[in-house]
Length: 380
Image (cartoon, rainbow, N blue to C red):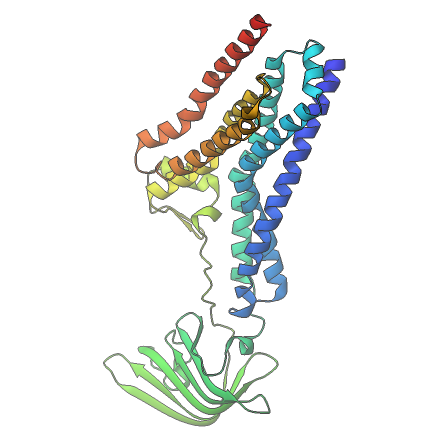
């Protein structure tokens, strides 16, 4: 009964430290990333609501990346804390075996692995895909705020705006528009063979419905074969609702559901398509799947590496350095895992090595710890 309370106490301390560290890392990284996302408002004129939801949905990808490192730090810090407060010495004197504590660390690492699986395989791809859908379906808040004076604005696909200045009445003067989407080609020509349209106007303004009202200008449409159609106007109205933002709306590999990536490998067909998703190159698919499924397996390895801090040593100067050596080793394991995953798509051998390394190291480290603790016991 007492031992169960001890295990519960140690588990709570480690898990509490894990979530505190994870929250701290995530908050800092999310703040930096959220600042970068301000371009959605400044350059692409998306509503603030879209920016906030987009930023929040990207939190899951940050959490996924910091879970292994947060667990390593939480375990190292908790062990050092128990040692400083002499709690471990009390446990050893009550007859608690060190291997049982190692087993407890390993069991907690399995829980963290399951959390990592949930985020990397299900939650993060779904959340990132939702954020991309949000950008794709959200309307632009104010086109007027995108277009700046004396600057060629290319915030829209294949459409460029330029205005020389704005007068005291907020009207734009000397306006130039270059359209290669054929959105405005019907203003000067009914021919569908138009290549591009150029609009020049002396004055213009945006009304409350984001429509562009132009005065005293020329619409020139270029057709195949080089023929030009010109149309002079004293006033015209352009509906800009059909303009597409240059912001990427096609889902990236990180935003693609895991089951779809597995199907890409299963059917060995790079042309497979489902909605907006299309199979990338096999190398990219294998690397991404390996990252989602393989990286969590390195978490139990760092739990066993951290357990080496339980080995008794004499109090000397090396004791201080020793506490950081195992953190560095655990950190290097995560770095090596991150490096190896980049090569998994090059060959089946690389993929096999990436997945086998943590599986082989776990029993090896466990066996070394058993021998160390057994030698300690015989020595005493």
